[in-house]
Amino acid sequence: MLDEWLPRLGIDIAEAATASCDPRTLFAPPLPTVWLEVGYGGGEHLAAQALAHPTTGLIGCEPYVNGVASLLRQVAEGGQRNIRIFGDDARLLIDTLADASVDRVFLLFPDPWPKVRHHKRRFIQPGNLDALARVLADGAEFLFATDHMGYARWALAHLTVHPAFKWQVEVPADWREPPVGWQPTRYEAKSIAQGLPRAYLRFRRLPRGAV
Ligand SMILES: C[S@@+](CC[C@H](N)C(=O)[O-])C[C@H]1O[C@@H](n2cnc3c(N)ncnc32)[C@H](O)[C@@H]1O
Image (cartoon, rainbow, N blue to C red; front, side, top):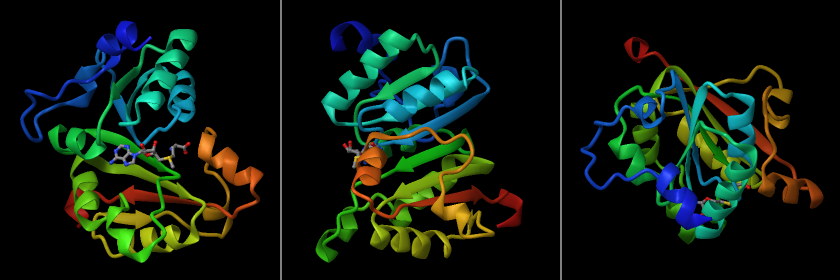
């Protein structure tokens, strides 16, 4: 599976210069809209979003090799033509992407690193938020979900002080319930089975002129 499908769908950044890659051109033919998922795990969410949005290019980043194989299996069965895979740390790929070139980023049930001394390993950090703000287009969306309320508070604390992001919330259901168009993830299903609370936080990338 890996040998046959990865060369077709894998993204190679070996020669990519910083901030040079227009991700729309990673698809053949190029697609007008690109969404990126950081840490797709088993790939169920990415595969389902690709089926539901055939004219959107879906880029999945996941260093876990079994996750890559799982997603490739789903693509082989589902026939999605709008998926590309980066099998490494998402930050390496993000650094190669052009400014304002991504229309949505998903960070779903990321490792919460609950111990205080490990908080620095959480994906949500000021430097990573700056990198996401650079590649997100004006008005684009950053969607974060977690079942770890400490990480939810951490995300809010970092994103609500970041000048490029605005939390999209009016009523409690806006963060307690999955947003419109939601596709389930494997870790979300585990969390539901364990009866854990979950937070679904949506942020808008503010227009550059307004920052
Ligand atoms: C707890 S799992 C959640 C998987 C999936 N999003 C879900 O909800 O089922 C977190 C995943 O993020 C991946 N991950 C962690 N840091 C990453 C990074 N910097 N870039 C890409 N993936 C990362 C891990 O390998 C792991 O598969």
